[in-house]
Amino acid sequence: VQLQASGGGLVQAGESLTLSCEVSGIIFSVLVMSWYRQTPGNQRELVAKITGIGTTDYAESVKGRFTISRDNAKNTAYLQIDNLKPEDTAVYYCAAGRPPPPPYWGQGTQVTVSS
Image (cartoon, rainbow, N blue to C red):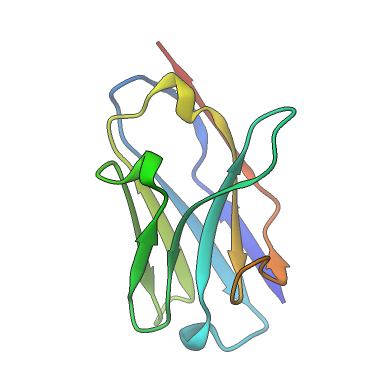
């Protein structure tokens, strides 16, 4: 099973960003997909998850700005982040499987938000 995360980068506060996570080696459509983030010295934080049928759940701290979605035809999950804030700076990880914790993880993609 492989998860390939992409889409991170350096952005200005207030901008939007979409992270992608392509999954291979497993039946994607039945998987719960999650996005976590981690800052130095802190534990990974679950920010969003989506079931195979599209039911979503979000951490309270990101509701209204983060949108998780999936395209089962492309074996890909997405995390759209709107109105980025400096405190969103973190390494973002996608994960597959029912939490917690999910059994499969991507390599992480860095998001850095400048003020």
